[in-house]
Length: 135
Image (cartoon, rainbow, N blue to C red; front, side, top):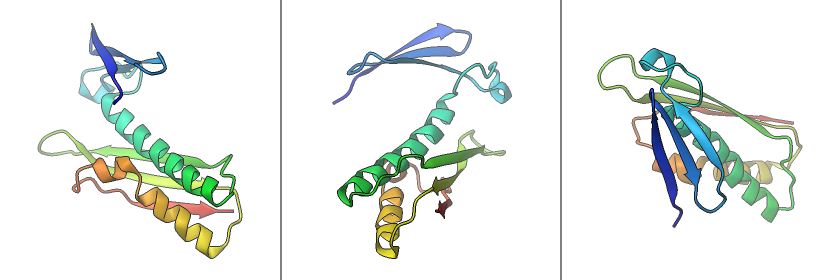
């Protein structure tokens, strides 16, 4: 179990403290939803969680194969709904891996990325197209 303590600071800002490490971060509402966009919005954190989870899960698989993913990158583009209740509609992911691997390793790493816990936790209505760029 991990505890995260969150405080509403006013003006649509929150601060959060990660219990195990003591690391802190802040959020703000986005400019298109009454905020100033001075920090990650809560839905930005979902996009961030997806990209970091995919790379981390791939990194775990890579370590088991003795493959180094250092220098790999993920870019996540978040799109919100334009009608109906405000929610995340799409999280497009591009993962760039500047390494050469076998076809079998490539498939195992891509499968790991697609099976990360954040992907499995998102609502099925959220579209998550993923592009991998190798070498």
